[in-house]
Amino acid sequence: MEMILTGQPIMAREAEKIGLVNRVVPVEAYFEEAKKIALQIAQKAPIATRLAKEAVLKAFDTPLEEGLQFERRNFYLLFSSEDMREGMRAFTEKRPPQFKGR
Image 1 (tube, rainbow, N blue to C red):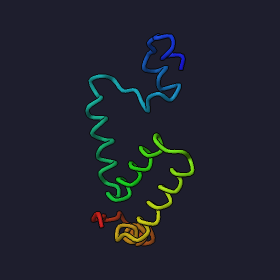
Image 2 (tube, rainbow, N blue to C red):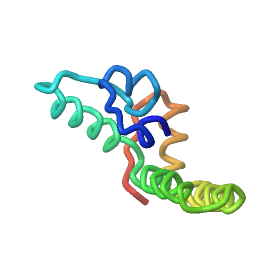
Image 3 (cartoon, helix red, strand yellow):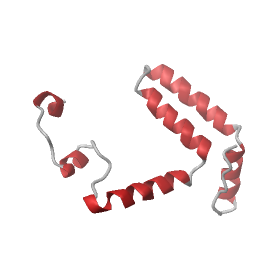
Image 4 (cartoon, helix red, strand yellow):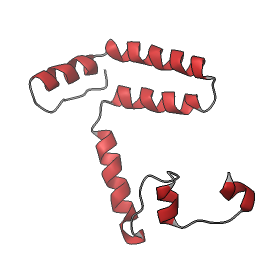
């Protein structure tokens, strides 16, 4: 609120400290860091990733109760997926999962 009302800019480290940004990296390393994060996300179960993103975005536009219903519906959808079963098997077998997006 302070930034918006005063128009005062802040330094990157301050933005990180107050939770406005997740991390600060040198300008010459930002693209490599972004690719690392993208790779981490790409290795996750695609259906779960998509539904998690939808739930977070939905939270901005809906009341709490509606957002919780949306999240609960997504949870049930995920529980019926092949990827959920593969994730559970991989966990119990102590191996990396092989998600297929089904």
